[in-house]
Length: 289
Image (cartoon, one colour):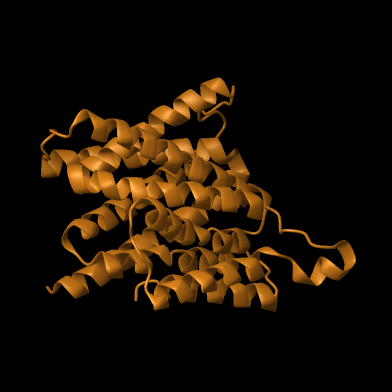
């Protein structure tokens, strides 16, 4: 199989995995809260990656600074999803997911500022499209005349989440180059669990399963496995495939999230917000060129 075809397949796998995870995260964040939903799904993902580690038998020889950097990356990833899931609790899943596309802008901005990476003319146009799309999607333009300028519920939280994800992906790239895709995923998943445990204790937030139904528990564990699979596929792809293909395809995950939200949650969006969603997604794809 050619590298190009493999890159496309891995990118699509990441797109569907993250898209499904974000949709289910939006559903269960409203039912049991963002911290519980994130913790138990990430715990399932960590166990899944442990199984992968047993199968692939990676060599645990990463230097101490890589492990410490993995823990830092885990904090950024956890913060990103805590804000993201909080946005889902408060607002329209489709609009929050579209706003979250800003993470691609933050990722490129930090890569430009701190890693010396530069954008092509097409990528610059893509970034501008993402910004325009997020602006169109995140504001209820029909209410401006009546209530003044107001962001839709959950949008502010989604922007904070996008900011932390932007930092995470640049840090994760550095770790992957030193530790490989299996250990990178394993270290970060472990760090996420550790951080969420400490955060819940410090914030005095209950993360035990409590009165969560067996069906809900099963779905949360399943979504964790799906998300871990998406992370593993993309990290693996970045080591053997074409990152310029994999990353934009996988980052178009909001296509999946929004489609599922419209079908199953009957999310309502205005024509302007719909145009913004399409514009932002098109901008992500444009960043591949």
